[in-house]
Image 1 (cartoon, rainbow, N blue to C red):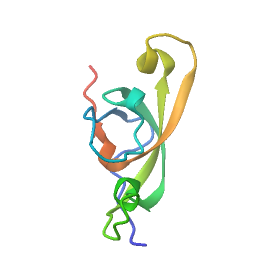
Image 2 (image 1 turned 90 degrees about the vertical axis):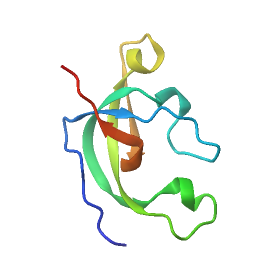
Image 3 (image 1 turned 60 degrees about the vertical axis):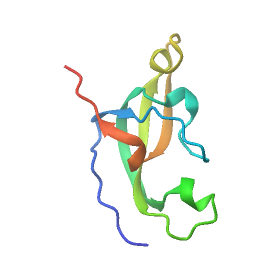
Image 4 (image 1 turned 30 degrees about the horizontal axis):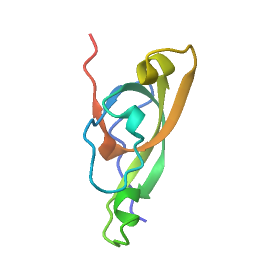
Length: 96
């Protein structure tokens, strides 16, 4: 499997994409459009969204452990949730 370059580093604040695709995605609906913090890159893997469609042309992307506060995801709670997310689900967030 070819190496995928990591765009994000531990501690980077990211936002997940917010659209609702018509196909399978590994990004849970409750985490779409939310802010999180990269914990660590976990390594490259083929994009599961395309692999689930039986396609062999899925791009290899870096997978990241991303930490979200429960308050960010559901509006309440004092705990955190860590999700493993593909690089194409994320964008750098400008949080000033």
